[in-house]
Length: 313
Image 1 (cartoon, one colour):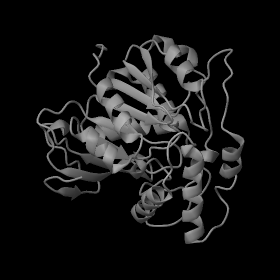
Image 2 (cartoon, rainbow, N blue to C red; image 1 turned 90 degrees about the vertical axis):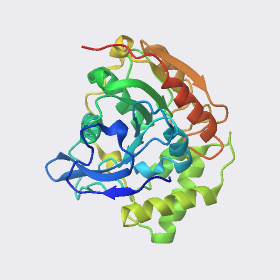
Image 3 (spheres, helix red, strand yellow; image 1 turned 90 degrees about the horizontal axis):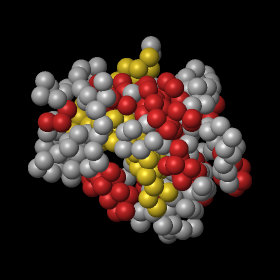
């Protein structure tokens, strides 16, 4: 993205008293979220004349925040400042040497810590895959921090008496290879093939596009090690699907009909479970943000950010 400049910082808070919505330069910083655990985060200023509240992008499991394509970020930044960040054990954030001692509850709280670090009292949340699960937890526990929410390539928190289809078998087989040893070229090839499976067949897949994306993520991370800690997280505290009916924050669920990780009817079930949910469909979309789906995805998100936000005490 273009802009007046870029500032990098360690522990310092670069957001001035005027608030994050008026920052005119891109800011990269680290956010302390637990003893010995820091997250890399990036604030990108809005490029339009009358920006709305910031958009916080929350990525899926084992995936750096740089997986949000720059073209999508640029489109969103025409109307809002945009914040993206690396989860624990991804990108430039802290990597654990042992199995993770955190789970989705802590990852959801990390998102609040990122907002606090940039002095953002309320934001539009956008979550993909695991990021969509984290957004649901935040809708339940921190609705006052959310202007609107958009989730896609995800499913609902467990709902009583509801069984939904899980990931496709070829994807499960590939996930079993996450920790297999690979050299640098082998790792890059594996990641591109993983994206090919996730993309599905409903929209064109360009291996060069995703190879360039992964090369950028590897350069950003500083090493070739495969992120896999999230596959070993302790999954607790998610049996709250029944509470979604009480959510009154406007929430958009985007259906990706060719999603092999959260196949239909996951998306529609989530939209119906939410008290203020609505569903739109991007034809052919799978579990990947390729250049074909960026225009309709950006349009759907930006339409959602114009929804009226309820007041919360």
